[in-house]
Length: 290
Image (cartoon, rainbow, N blue to C red; front, side, top):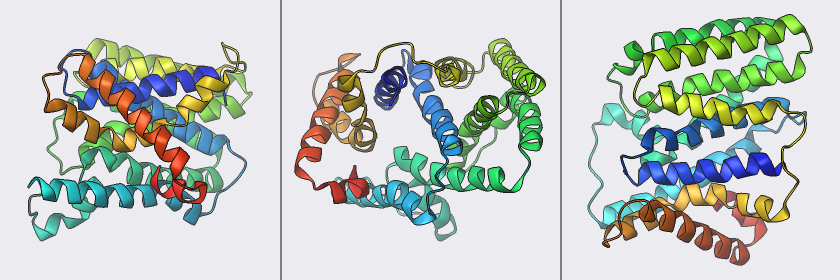
């Protein structure tokens, strides 16, 4: 584990907590944490030489999603927050989950299967060129597709799509030693950043510029800081923090705590709860919950 990457992972997790605290200041920058998570997930999935069976991916992503969907459903049902939905929307309701922040888990599961399939069945040069063209095109027409009124979680999926492409291109940059291939990738990323900067689209431009900037660490051959067992241990709590942080946020919202202190305390309390849970819950069960 690279401690420099793990620091960004911790900051990204804090950013997600900040985003869900509904503090207006810094909200767009906070969501860059999700962009970083998607880019790194795609990059490391493709970089791994181990092709994990589908059931193992499901265990790590879908089972925690099901577990926490049930927990949040019960909690929301208890407080009267669950609303009946039309039957025709049941598929999207399942993908959205009872607590919308869990949409990431089925999404990244689908993405993982898709990108591994691309890696196996299509020439890398083809996907490299296609994604290099598609990425800046998505950002150029960002205002258009952002204006679509789609059923949740499709807006989240569409917003996350460029991060999937970036993760794939970063992987291609890593494995391709061809100067032309790398030039194409860098040009695509640079043009994309220019389009983002010019458009200044709320919820997209700043979010992706920051997310891409942090993700460049993936392309460095050597970490920029020494390995720290403390940082690496703390970063192992991030998945659990992501799963549970909505609950501490909801509790703290009932108090007079506001501003930056709200997400900070929610992050710290979530980390503490997950740390204790990891000490109590057997390792064999943790992958289904935390």
